[in-house]
Image (cartoon, rainbow, N blue to C red; front, top):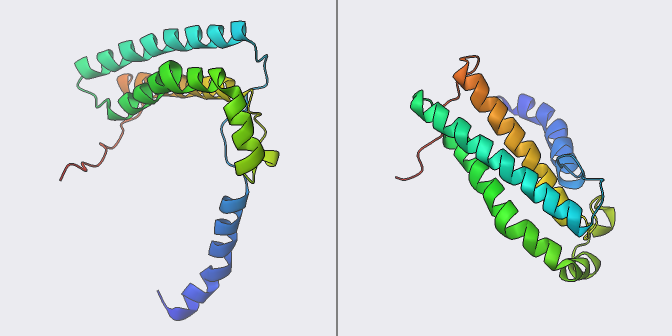
Length: 153
């Protein structure tokens, strides 16, 4: 690249970096009820999706398809369903305090402290659906994913 071409890119690059740093980037926002019954129903639904994702992963393995990406999704979903979301639900007062005192962008956060656990589960449902669809596309040979990099060395 020449010096002139770098100068021409300066403004668009900095504009993009500024926007990425200031605009909230997020998945769908949960807008449903935030009561105990709904929380347990979301967890139950997610547990069912997790089982379906595990089945698809096994099908893909048997077909010789890499399941590395789906396995990362599965582990993330399991952690949120079994650990993080229940903790956030049970400790809403702590999260309210964090939102109130420490997080300068919290007043702009579309997800309240009380809805955080619900939003996490809702996002996990979306992740599960996408991982299942991606595995299905691989099984039907519509897509082929590049193997993930090996960071073990």
